[in-house]
Image (cartoon, rainbow, N blue to C red; front, top):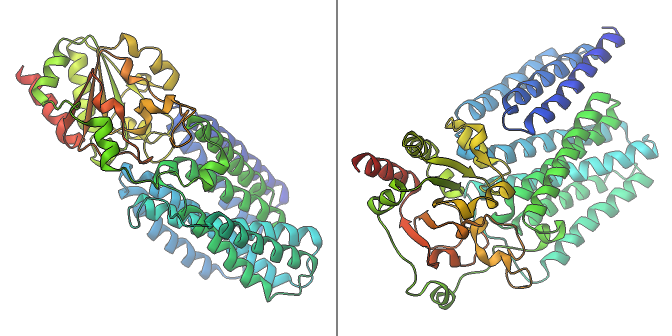
Length: 462
């Protein structure tokens, strides 16, 4: 195949990848962006197959079949609530693929590897392998295979950094002398262990930022591999992936008012709420309610704002919530959805769930726009959210408060707040929420889906 045709196909793929990121940046164009990215990847794969002479087509076919058998069910039958776990697995497989190719390149070329190529290989393998184990742990925590709380022990930061330092030192040794192949397995092992320890020490509250950071690592690993393989498309695609993941992680950290170092090594979410602390915050002040009482509030409301959280995702309540919103709108009530940037288990999780339930895009409002209107809101329905509506975040000077200074949805400014939650258990940050005991708050203790369904029934009866 002519190099000109292959280069043209690569340029088309790159353009589609860029258009994909542009489309995915807005809810209205996200579907088009997703299709553009998929088409770009198909063209990229075809162009790559045309660019090189294949030695073993049978192995290629076997690899494609295995990938399709595993990937198709994950894409078709994976519930929307499990998208964060699916994303973590994608990072794991992508990073592992890049790392394994880099390892094969090393063994195939050593010891005759130039300084630049070996430097890139070392960086690529370290990033790839630590991203693989880190993403597997992130998946396991999100899937609740292992506890979501961070693994905390004395000296853990020093232990983790020492292991990373060992991997880096061995990488430098290999750069200076690629013939010392015996050090490569040790470097790989240290990278795998560091990725494991890194994410094990991070709590569930920080998973949105962690997913974005791991996405960045996987992209950078792929871009580095592109230099080794002299594949311009891989360089650009990996750079786009790495830079977008980095920008997203910056936005996530900003949304939580946290630094990278605090997210990676802060151990947020490891504290256990004491009974005395809960009693101090909630004692005798929490008011329980019923679906019928909430329906009475909604009957006279002119403006209602829904604030979805991870509890809505867990109970698969998005369709029931949509039915409730549609019923209110049919009665002339103004309805909106206030979305916090880190609500749920990954960036945009709530938007994806509500879009799946056919909630109109224009009804999804961001943090600043929502906060500007809460004072004019009659009823706020908080559905499974906790930390993102916790008023103690406003106390930015409290060093013991893991969410101090984090921008929140100011739902307590509304006339009435209805919190739908199964219990008073704390959120991922592990601290009580004074909103639950506020004078204008009532608690509807129930599963989110059951509560939304009961509210629809109560409104219809009324």
